[in-house]
Length: 638
Ligand code: C2E
Ligand code: CA
Ligand code: CA
Image (cartoon, rainbow, N blue to C red):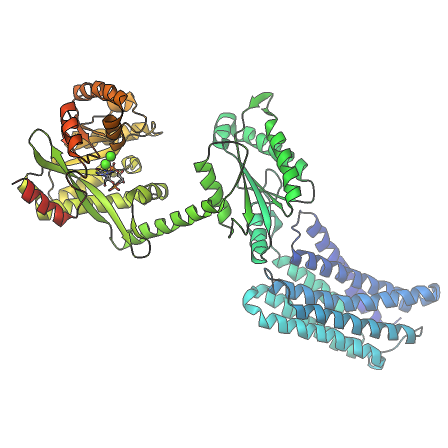
């Protein structure tokens, strides 16, 4: 028994222990089945097997040859040689897969692997035939065939280094270091083995396994804690790979719409019970073949490759959510939203999942499973572009304000106007406020647009002094989102004060909405505006909810009949009765009445007879630039 064999045995046992500890840790948590994960597993198992066979081979061939049958000594020796050599090849493929993470592996690596396997297999076979026992030789006296095997091994390592260098921009530095370490440690191990006959290569493999394991993503980061399923982050990564590879997939997504209500009524424990129950119903449907993910709390996703698979799942899904959900024996209504997104026909990128879900959640009422259509993505893209144009206009102060004259039926003069924002984008052209205001309301930029509009109107009044031509007030539209902004009143005061604009000259138009959640804040802001001397106008009367509560609780000075109501009044007799009753009521509440959308002389006459106070519409003028508006009132009011 040589001392070098003993030292080698010590290193091999260390290698086995390292591999076992890492395997234990690795398999104790749920893992994704990605290509690199699978190849890492192969590398880890091969490294363990190699060290294990080396120990067996040492025991059988060097320590106890007299007690071991020769066939077993031969077998151990051959398996050891095969396993050591396969580690090098597996590592090469693993390293290439790391650098080609989201891409298909290059053909060259396939052919290289074949060449290496054939060369190794031939060498090992020759070695096997010529191998004679007992072998107690020193490294320097290795047969030529062993040296050829070393050449093969180093050829694999060199190829690994070349692939890594070519693709280094796709590899994180720590991964590059790991690969370099593997190559260098193998080189050192060979030199040590050559001069001292101490086998270090298995120890080098084990240390590499450890280093790579340390740089693997922590699987806990990809698990949703309540359901134990893969989370949204894991889905995004997997989807990115599928999209990149151009694979055709179907992504089913569903969401508990009323989760916030469930959480607030039943508490988080109740919410979790529902979530777990739904997770288990979905898991029961998908079995092991499909990937199922739980994204941020109440959304689930399932990936399908085939139509048939999905069809069956869909039937099961409808049954599964049709069954009642219970928390502590009480039935809990669970309101589901579900949608199927096809990649690459409908969905194109990972972020489309969230935006498509949001789009359909906001724009569809019904249950069942909605099949996402191309138009959804087109609309989403258009919204994104418009949102971007709004941001650009805000940054460049590029919003313009147009003014539409309002005709006073009592004085027969154009005593006021409505300020209307205009957006012209270099790429998208003119964008209607009907399109960009709702988008700006969703992303909050409406507050900044509002600021620019108010500033622009103030500047207009300060510079042009339209009062000179009989203009008594200017209407400014306020979005409900702006009205809820806590510092809104103070900020408006400040801007108007800066240009010395009399408060009584400004009327704020507000559109009635379904009773706002923050009714109290809205009420206090509007009351403060009113008590500061601004006028308030209820816009688009007759379109929304016409809640009496809104009219009674807010101090409106003006009510604007919406153009659709005015049009209906002109065309359908039953509206005559309705409006004839509304007019005295609105007047009785102390409000002046403006009719919008007045397009013909006939409308002017009819609305005059009805008892309106003001008229606004294309019949008099379209909204025009500040300069044209001044010219308009100068001529018309003289
Ligand atoms: P709105 O407040 O009801 O404004 C009246 C809209 O009717 C304007 O459309 C105006 O051009 C149009 N209009 C005026 N007379 C006639 C007519 O005789 N016939 C027809 N068919 N239409 C007429 P615009 O400028 O496209 O604005 C659309 C909406 O965008 C506005 O509806 C308002 O809700 C919103 N908006 C416009 N500017 C602002 C703003 O500065 N802030 C906020 N928050 N919203 C704004
Ligand atoms: Ca308006
Ligand atoms: Ca209106």
